[in-house]
View 1 (cartoon, rainbow, N blue to C red):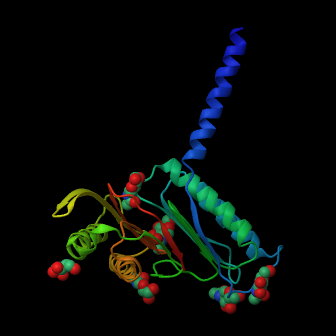
View 2 (view 1 turned 120 degrees about the horizontal axis):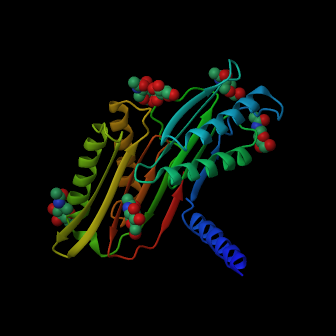
View 3 (view 1 turned 180 degrees about the horizontal axis):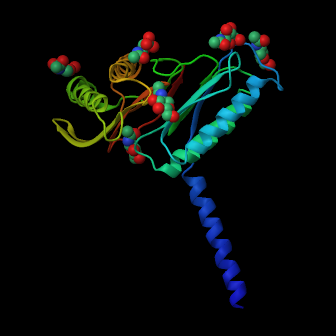
Amino acid sequence: MMKIIAHFAMALFCFLLFYFQTMSESVKMLTECNELSDNFTRTSSYRSNRDTLLSTLRDRSSLESYSNVTVGPSPNTVYGMFFCRGDISRTSCSNCVHAATLNVAETCNSHKGASIFYDECVVQYSNVSFFTLVEDAPAIRRYSPSRSLGSSDFFNQTLPGKIYELILRAASSSQVPYFAEDQEHVTQLEGSYDLEALVQCSPDLDTRNCTVCLRLAVEDFFECCSHAHLAHIIFPKCLVMYNISALQPSLGVING
Ligand SMILES: *[C@@H]1O[C@H](CO)[C@@H](O)[C@H](O)[C@H]1NC(C)=O
Ligand SMILES: *[C@@H]1O[C@H](CO)[C@@H](O)[C@H](O)[C@H]1NC(C)=O
Ligand SMILES: *[C@@H]1O[C@H](CO)[C@@H](O)[C@H](O)[C@H]1NC(C)=O
Ligand SMILES: *[C@@H]1O[C@H](CO)[C@@H](O)[C@H](O)[C@H]1NC(C)=O
Ligand SMILES: *[C@@H]1O[C@H](CO)[C@@H](O)[C@H](O)[C@H]1NC(C)=O
Ligand SMILES: *[C@@H]1O[C@H](CO)[C@@H](O)[C@H](O)[C@H]1NC(C)=O
């Protein structure tokens, strides 16, 4: 009898474990295979280097929230990296990089370069080194259209002020590299809101390029989705996100 109960408890435990792991899975937003590059054949050494690279990134993701890897001699060298959002756990980071590397190997089966964006991590590889470079494409732009706040100072003062303050903090942060977030209760004439914002750079950028990347992301945001109640702009090397709670957003999505 005890044995049956023990088995049942074990099964329940496994189910719950599976359930919560599934619940916390990060969400894929974009896979971009580099169509410009030549395809490689299934048996090429570029392919085996690529596969080694992706599995090395997977291994490192259980230890680090950022890693760059270079595999193989020229002309079949593959360069790759991942970075995870600074506000997630190591386990979530590792789960995200696992999902992303497996997905990109399948989707970009024979492409020399690829970028894959999840909501919690970004993974990229290429036959050309892209470390330390600012890239502004491909990008994720996810936002919710504006409601009643249209005429307030919030979007032309409070929010840009907060975002630029975070950019300064992120670009000068050393403790958790290039990550800054803030939660603030904002009170304005029309009402009060909880504003949550975060900005982050990939650690391969230097301070200057971190700032350049974040400013590009913010400009991009003001072009596409100013007055949004929620916005997530994810570039290959940096991200800017905020949301204003106490308002029900309806999501709009642009990829490109
Ligand atoms: C990368 O691949 C592209 C397309 O095959 C090729 O034109 C380019 O020369 C390669 N670059 C390097 C550094 O191998
Ligand atoms: C690579 O393969 C894809 C799909 O198999 C094809 O659409 C694309 O044209 C190929 N590119 C080159 C440069 O051969
Ligand atoms: C910063 O990014 C630019 C543009 O990608 C690149 O040309 C430059 O070399 C980068 N700076 C450093 C220090 O790597
Ligand atoms: C912000 O926008 C409002 C309404 O659109 C305007 O009245 C206000 O002067 C603007 N403030 C700044 C600093 O531009
Ligand atoms: C790449 O990773 C190595 C450690 O594996 C590190 O020393 C180096 O600074 C990294 N390069 C960049 C550009 O982040
Ligand atoms: C936005 O709101 C959700 C909860 O509604 C929260 O989990 C998330 O971290 C918030 N922050 C950003 C920057 O999206």
